[in-house]
Length: 220
Image 1 (cartoon, rainbow, N blue to C red):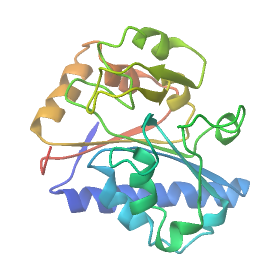
Image 2 (image 1 turned 90 degrees about the vertical axis):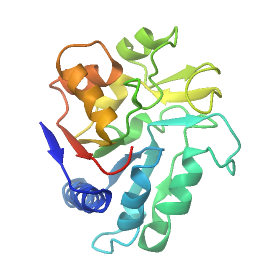
Image 3 (image 1 turned 180 degrees about the horizontal axis):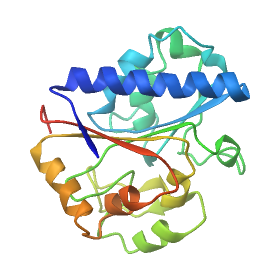
């Protein structure tokens, strides 16, 4: 179930190719495509590769985020800033970004679903997006049909307030790509597969949305 790559470059090549294929297929079949991007270290090299893809019309692609810190748009910890700096350049500069913070207009996010591709990282505590163990609202975010939930300050790194897609929103997807690096995070996946109740475990144990777990020992 875990796809292994020798290094970060090989993982980024495979992920970018697969995500580009998903977006291209969506554009062929429905004339538009949606991508849920994510923050952290793992996706940046993938964004670099995707930004150079010229095989399809980026003007018909909308990019949103799995979660966001409630910070200014130019803050270094902003996930939207990472997407603007690393993905929305080159050929992909013509794509449209729908930020999660400030919250999008009602209906704008729902109009993108089902998402054609969802990218996710994972923390060593088993969190995905900002579905973080220790959040008193976690179970609600894992079970509600709402698309987003606020996350209070004091959780995650940095410990600022956040907004996150809920589990049901993440699973309203045609393809999910879970990107992990390092032995410690592989161990978290193994624990989740063994039945430990972690947010990532809920993700990988479901059967609604197809998921690929891409791992490299390089980094993490």
